[in-house]
Amino acid sequence: MSTTAHWQALGRAHLFQPFVDNGALQQEGARVITRAEGCHIWDSEGNRFLDAFAGLWCVNVGYGRPELADAAARQMRELPYYNLFFKTVTPPVAELAGAIAELTPPHMNRVFFTNSGSEANDSVFRMVRLYWQLQGEPERQIIIARHNAYHGSTVAGASLGGMKPMHRQGGLPIPDIEHVQQPYWFDEGGDLTPEAFGLKAAQALEERILEVGADKVAAFIAEPIQGAGGVIIPPDSYWPEVQRIVRKYNILLVVDEVICGFGRTGEWFGSDYYGLEPDLMSIAKGLSSGYAPIGGVVMADDFAAVLSEKAGDFNHGFTYSGHPVSAAVALENIRILRDENIVSRVKEHTGPRFRERLQSLADHPLVGEVRSVGLLGALELVQDRDTRERFPKVGQTGALCRDLALEEGLVLRATGDTLLFSPPLILSEQQMDEVITTTKSALDRAWAQLS
Ligand code: PXG
Image (tube, rainbow, N blue to C red; front, side, top):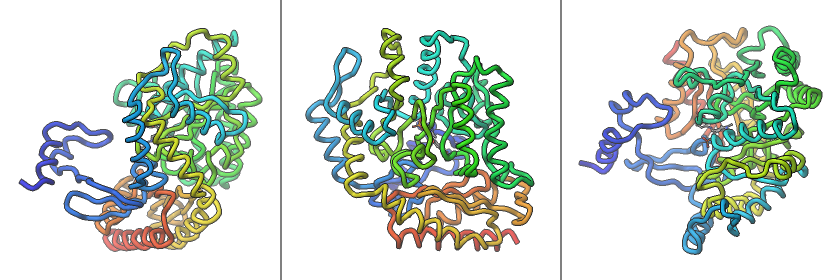
């Protein structure tokens, strides 16, 4: 048996995989990914792919950085594990907290560590409710989120998220979570201009606050740009209005930076890009460029002060809250992002160039809209470019284009009939051109098959 067949057989027999149809996968067999370097991954048959998705929105500094491997190995030899529960701390975790506080907005200086974005949002859920209990307003329990948001796969994360297929499996959301209009002009804006629709989507938050009672709302949680939902870049009118509303009703603003954080938008955080003033930020993914699992909740000073001064013991945490190996890797990852000016390069050079190159696909007969911020991009695939009408079987054309691109050695993602791009932030000009050329070829072939 070839090694590929061997690994596929083991997977078929013993693995149960996330976010796939496991029955179908057992028939097909999984592609075995064996190594990676820069912006490329290789499978066990020696095929090379340009990864325009940075793994799963996370490998910001690219694959194969020896400094990150060395940081992990060094830390494992020195101190592979110790916890933060016994009034103890470890050097890389203390250093990382300091490094994060330097990067986050000036009023945010305290971090609670987790292993993932989901755990970060679960921790958010606890923290905001505790905060209002401590402030003498325990009836503030409701957290408002948005339809089609992604906030993770744990029970609280999936409940905060607005993914109906996730809610259907397991009886979610849990109580006291409300979902409101997302700022997705292309699909839901109708005849309104993007600006008018952006305002309307923001005002849906205010309407819901008034409906459930402002004194019952604890927080509003949102991604600056929805990632998994389809790289939904809100109209410019959206965020200023949301910021006004949360201030007016004294509602905590939780910004989920799991995808937008650590340079993806050309700023360190999506909150910087949109000028937001979060009370809490969830972080993960780009924090370690995916080299080790780590996430966290960054807290505003006045929020942290309430929990520190009034809560007594904080009865929440994970064995690996502040894992020293993950922390050492994240610290080195931040050093690379900073010392190599990777984030400012995205802002000044790579992001604008990507926007321009992606825009060259705007005239394609399948493409209804092109949008990007930094190195987050999306193409909307439509049947009718003028009316924005979708194909009857939503998802088919997206999957077709994705599969055709993969045949030509390019990894993209499709959500419904939206093609998504989130390449490593170190993508070279030549690689960017290859992303565009291969995407165009996939669109052409899909168009030929469909017409
Ligand atoms: N928030 C956001 C905004 C995310 O994108 C999470 C939280 C959860 O993070 P963890 O580390 O627990 O996965 C995410 C994760 C997709 C896809 O289909 C996206 C994510 C995860 C899995 C699939 O695009 N994002």
